[in-house]
Structures are given as structure tokens and as C-alpha cells.
Amino acid sequence: MARIPYADLSDPEAGPLVSRIVAERGAVLHLYQMLLQSPPVASGWLNHLTGIRQKTTLSGALREMIIMRVAVLNGAPYEADQHAPIALREGMTQAQLDALDNWQASDLFDDTERAVLAYTDAMTRDVQVKDEIFEAIRARFEPRQIVEVTATIATYNMVSRFLEALQIHSHDERG
Image (cartoon, rainbow, N blue to C red; front, top):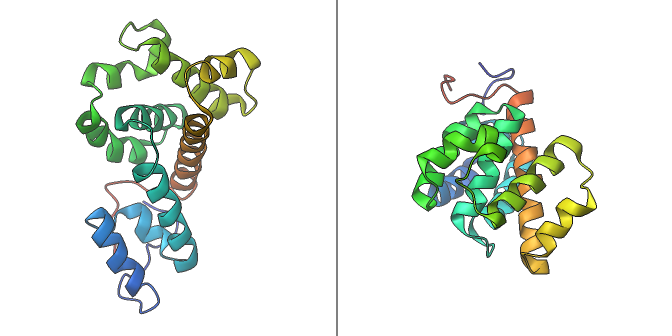
């Protein structure tokens, strides 16, 4: 159960944003209903996440692999619950999802995916990234994609930290 109540979706201040979220996402998920406790924060969050999820040049499979690895590392089940079906639609296999816990021992990831997973691990666990890990990214991506990979990792660390601090879960009852 979430640590604070979910926002009232009928609040007039939230109304326009609720409509936009439904139009863009199909429904107001638990995450957004919590964010709507502060409509300005929810609005900025939605803009940012829309950029990360829908406007980068990264493949959907690579983006979702990053998101799922961040969820694993941060113990964020809501993030994993929401993104596993998306990852499968975007081209990840169930075997790859299952192997994310111990990707280093798996032969299911190519060299580019392995470089991205190592970068994800370094950014998430250590914050500072060792030169050799970054060089593997630089060797495979142009600057735009490096920024997009980095921003995706950073963003989903933000998401999982928000979810876990407030204990937002898919099974929560909402008002």
C-alpha cells in the first residue's frame, strides 16, 4: 500500500492533465495518480518520460532492456510489472527478461547489449562510470544515442526511486 493517498482524479486542477495522460497512455496508472498530488510535477514528469519513451532514436528493445535492468537492480516490482509486457512487444524475449538478473553469465545478449547493461549497472550501482565501461558505449553509439542511453538509465532510476520511496505497487487500491 502506498505511503500517502493517491490523488483525487476529479480534482479540477488535475483535470486537464488527467485527460492528457489518458490520451497518451490509455489510463492513469498508479504512478501518475500519485504524481497528480502535484500537477506541476506530474506535468513535467509526463513531458520528460514522453521524450524518453517515444522520441529518442533508441530501439524499443534496447530502451526496455535498460528499464528492466534498472527495475531489477533497484528492486522495483511496479516498474518491472509495467514494462515487461512492453519489452516483449518491443522485441526482447522472455528468456532475455529472465536472464537480466545475471546477464553477465548469459549468452542471450550481443556485445552492444552487454555494453549497455554494464553501463546501466555502473550508473545505477556506482553513479561514477569507469572509463573502460564508457569507452565500450562510445565505440558503439554516436553522441546523440549516448545521451539517450544515459538519460534513459538516469530517468528510470528516478522512476524506481520515486516508486519505492512511496511504496507504489500495481495491486494498490486507489480512490
